[in-house]
Length: 249
Image (spheres, rainbow, N blue to C red):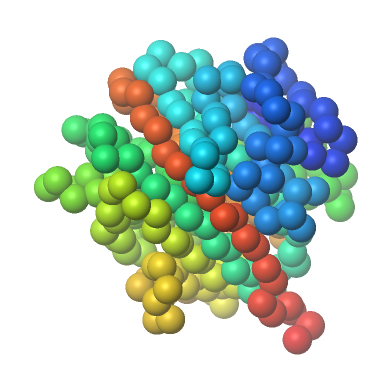
């Protein structure tokens, strides 16, 4: 199972391997605080307990990680997921906002810390399930680190997670990230990353970015090394996804 908790908007159910209780109000209200209305049928909340998520007064969600939090898939996490449908060859734009609090404690060892990722999953059109599905690393991800006192996002790309670039980020204010991805299992895959209102990408890279032919789901929040021993809060908001081009265009 890829999730400790998966809250389904369409069914208004939640499935748990850990049996935690999500906070009130209900799951849809939490998702409405962060994703566009058209994304609700595809969105889920993935948290281990009620303390890991809250709605912000100014819109969006705050995701929280705690020392000693229970492990899920080799790390600790508090995320939302959007399983947005597309076909191989499509170009999809993903846009969201994040805000790093002023008192966000970094990891002195800069161990892995993911704040956004696109992960492969079983091909439901072929009848595949999570049973016996191989465990893979995401072919596109944004990681967090701190270099000489500067908070940065690292963008990794491809099956071997090659570093595509670094993005310095500011604390205490919202920043907007946009990733335009042309999805492919071949060399014609591509990624362009934009910051705030810039019309010119700050990172561009190409190559294979799908591990199978089925849509890779988007996860946003925090997922980090299990030995990082700090309480961390990350605020996320305004998740918007749209298809720019299709393979039939």
